[in-house]
Image (cartoon, rainbow, N blue to C red):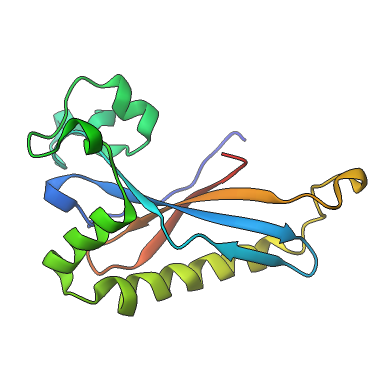
Length: 165
């Protein structure tokens, strides 16, 4: 690819002031017709530094990227986090934070239904593609990791889909 077109989400959901995305797992058992399952326990990946839009922070991957490898290479961790969760939160930790800051039932009534809808649309767009499994692997499965950013209004934005992450 020579060019990439993208939109920067201006108001991402930022737990404790840090940019975050969710890794949503999807298991595909059959390509056509599509048979897939979403894992009900995504995890949250957080940036190390507080989200800021000042000119000097725009190229800082520890502010604007949530990729775990980028964050592990950085030397900064949020002070309020323990060593165990400075860059990743379990789904239950994220849901607890979300319930405190967005309403007790925000996950079940807003986020999860929207994530499910997004994943269905992505899978629907993928289904017409020829089955990537060779014929001798017809009884196999594929695991996908979908990276999704939530904005302040809890709308999901697909960042990327990783095959066999």
